[in-house]
Amino acid sequence: MRKVLHVGPCHTPGGMATVMHTLAQFPPDGWEAELLSSHATGGWWTKWRAYRRARSELQRRCTNAESRPAVVHVHAASDWSLRRKLRLIRRVRSCGVPVVLHLHSGKLAAWMGTANSPRAQRHRATVARLGVTQVVLSDTWQRVLTPLVGPTEAVVNPVPPTYVPGQRARDAEHLLVLGRNDPVKGHAFAEQVGTRLAKDRPNLRLTLTGKDRSPLPFVQALGWVSEATKLELLQSATVLLVPSSVEGQPLVVLEALACGLPVVVAQDLHSLPSGVVRAGPSVEDWARAVESVLSGSTTVEVDLEAHRVDSVAQQWGRLYASLLKD
Image 1 (tube, one colour):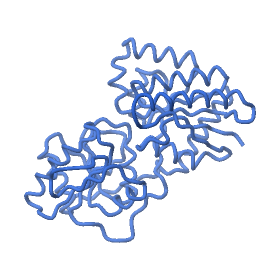
Image 2: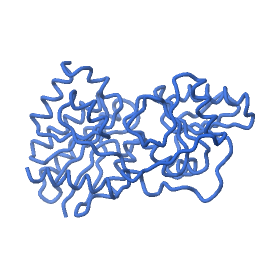
Image 3: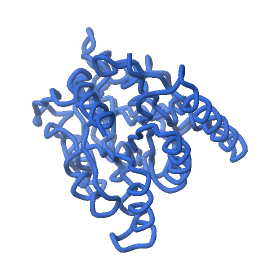
């Protein structure tokens, strides 16, 4: 059976790791999949050691007839993540193994700048020279990124099949924010929205993951949580808030919708199903959007058929097969 090797931050909490594990667990028909971690949480030395281990392991596998994968599927963000991955890709291509470069980051366009920037020109020249197939997360990202990075294919993120509606009634007035403790994720902004809503809703509560403390009495800061706890939160909360406007295709939104949880997102966020509620940019805008969900005046229907794991796996199967024909 043909093997695809997924390379990326599979042991680092976040949406990219979840996508990697889902794709590895549900490979295309006729394929088996393995994971290779290229990243570790911690300081620069810890990260460098993880990268070195991945580089050595890739070299070993790609030069060994028994362990050699048919395709190496590299998952990358932007900035230094992308630069490190391109170094790994050079090793793989020197062994003659086809490579998919899967671009997940919502910051990539800003990092590349313009199509004529030295960074964008170097990237296009590198992937063309190496013969790398690049994949982005949606048709919209394909239109945005192709002029910057070169030819791309579009394949959406899959929703893990474990994300389904819960069996019990949802909590009342329970807001939820899921994500790492990074300013770009908008935890502080969500707290401002919660403070505004709590003036009229004294029973309102806000749960934050990633962040482990908050001075606000209605906020429960849980730090990082397990997948089981995340699923429980998505099945019990009233509405998910996604204040970040810098996202590729946030998996947590797809997971929430699969669980039947209404989602309010920043108005500029794209590459998502039409059933999300959009808000912004002000706290008052967000308060009105969230209030419309809490009061039941906003109802949405969501079609996640394109994100089913079997549908996404079929797309990857066709893409992998096309690489083997070259």
